[in-house]
Length: 513
Image: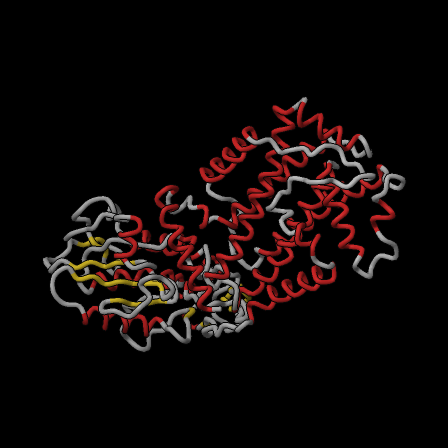
């Protein structure tokens, strides 16, 4: 299992390199699969509402209304129908790739189990929405889908009489059947939307909108395909005959040929086993999580910064319990905390400059305290010698997550407070380039990389990324002129500078004293 996951991860990594060059890191489709899924859902919903204006639910009128909007009004309703279909197909592709990518990056176990499990019903609701949509067209493909589906449903013990005999015969078929289908095709997507909303509830500020440019490109591509290849119509359904051949939508109906060849009991057993396997994956095997963050009330003033930065809503503000003159204090939910350390980096009392007494901050990781991080920085600086020295603060899950001289490895680069960079500068590391991994590849979550980038910008003096000779920042926040010291550079990033440079080229100008 681990080998397969590692192979997939390398495959995604290699695929993302050319996409980064083509689209840029922020617009990379593979880094925006979740937001793209939301965008495609709204495209499908909007085109579906527009098509419903022209749709007639009668036995004969259902097909005639679809034929009329596809041919007579092809330039608006016909394009909307094609856009509806192709956006649905792309939604299926995005959903499955998103599932594989999260699994390969190991972002489904431990504290992430909730998002993974709530994503499983989303898969089935997407497929059910697509299948009921094909019924509504009531062409030969719809007839094939309807008969195959009802035969599969008849194998379940829930129905007293076969569905096909009650609804899908020339004598029993009526407009009420299509009214029921319309109801299902509206109700199921609504259930899908509900599950998508639940799916992101444990993620703070979850992104449901892709970058505007990527949205425009995606929609433009779908519209172009809709004009170039209009969605086909297979001819009216005829229940007195069996269609000899139909053109399948392999994205949504790809398993239907298998359903034709395999007994229904095998299909249902396989579907049940796959569902159970997907639900159980977060515990096969379970991941050993580091200890949850701890709050030290003597150093907590209830500023809410840790609550605002936590990517998984693991921190809440509650009334003060120690009698201190502050209205609230931070409280950590250990069942949600992923031990990323971002809360420690956000705490105003997280300063490595303190020398008197133990280095305690308002919120800290028991397995990786700020005091330990400071000691590692001092030791890493002592290991470096010679000209052009480089100190790297790296993510343990990135390309630079292996020990090396002058490297400090953190659970997440967002764990480093701004004052830590001032502390490193005080060790005469005068200049640095920056190299952060694209946020979409952050193992902890999409919220962390923008936070790390924001902190890195926060600690830089004005203009430090634009020209040489920019003044460094001192520990008290004032600017000072750099003393004459050998050239040294501080590299801050979630990926190795060398790999980042090979993949994306220079990411920022280097500063020289």
